[in-house]
Amino acid sequence: MTRKPRIAVIGLKGLPAYGGAATVGENIIEQLKDKYDFVVYATSSHTNIKTGDYSGYKQIVFRKLPFKKLNTFYYYILSALHVLIIGNYSLIHLHHRDAAFIIPFLRLKNRVILTTHGMVLTDKWKSLKWLFNIQDRVFLGLANIITTVSLKDKHIVNSILRKKEQIEYIPNGVNLNNQFVYEHSESIVFAAGRIIPNKGCHVFLKALINLNYKGQVKIIGDLNQMPVYQKELESLAEKLENIEFVGLIKDRKVLNQYISSAKLFVYPSEIESMSMMMLEVASLKVPMICSRIPENLDVFSKEEVLYFEANNVLDLREKIQWAILHPDKMITYANAAYSKVMNNYIWSNIAPLYANAYQTLLK
Image (cartoon, rainbow, N blue to C red; front, top):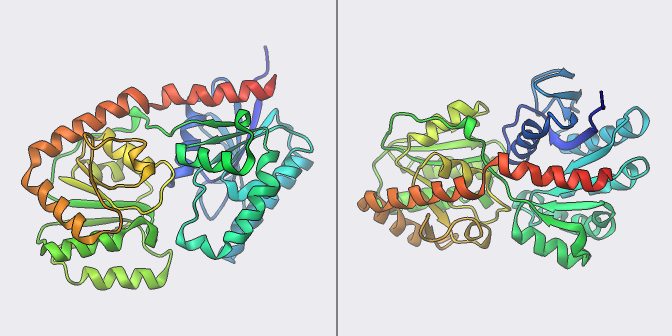
């Protein structure tokens, strides 16, 4: 019996997934596990399960450091050392451009495919922009193949490397097996894995305050990323009558319950790569109001979601009011967005593109 190619996956940090990049990796593995043996490198800060064999993959979990800011760097170093000293792999799938510094070590034994999940830094990392710029120019091009999840990222990588034959755009997708339908409610929902300023939650709350909105509002996501910003959002929330900070929801079924029951989903992000959240909301046929940024416009047209000018409180206020007054039109948008997802962004159709990249390197 022919042995399946063995692929090490670094950068997801832990499965089951509850973040965007980890969700991407998890779905790639789920779709391709019959063709490849996947070994996922993880850290205990991002998963509650232990080292072992799971549904179609093996996970190696390193113990986290008590110093949060050093933990990711430590995780990448340990993963690279394990691959070099102990691992026996056909190739390496590395996620995130911030891990590019380990590519020279990985290349000592293996070919590497790197998937970037955002080339524009959020507020949390802007102070290290100089370091990312150096890393991009020194290490990024050492990957055998680079895939980007957005067209914007592809253009950025092209401008850095000018090696177009090495760079491929593969969009994100949704898995229909994860979709559920629940009873409708009257809530307006905002959700993000990490609630940081670039996600625009403050713009959303200010728009609701300006509108004097009295209905249900639910904020889903990890609010503990930046304490100063957390205080700002909690202060704004005091001016709304019926708001709930739900927190981070790791259970996909529970998250879908909140989202699919909403009458309206607002996505005011200032920076994106290709939003998994937008795709998942569209797959649940929930009407969306989204920021008019290139990353979002590359996915959905103005006939599929209602757009507002990014970081513009008054424009978002007007769009929320319009959506509330025109529910039938918003449902029409939602149905069109759903059709777009079904035709273009299903994992069973997207994962084979990663398999093609794997096969290119395995040859």
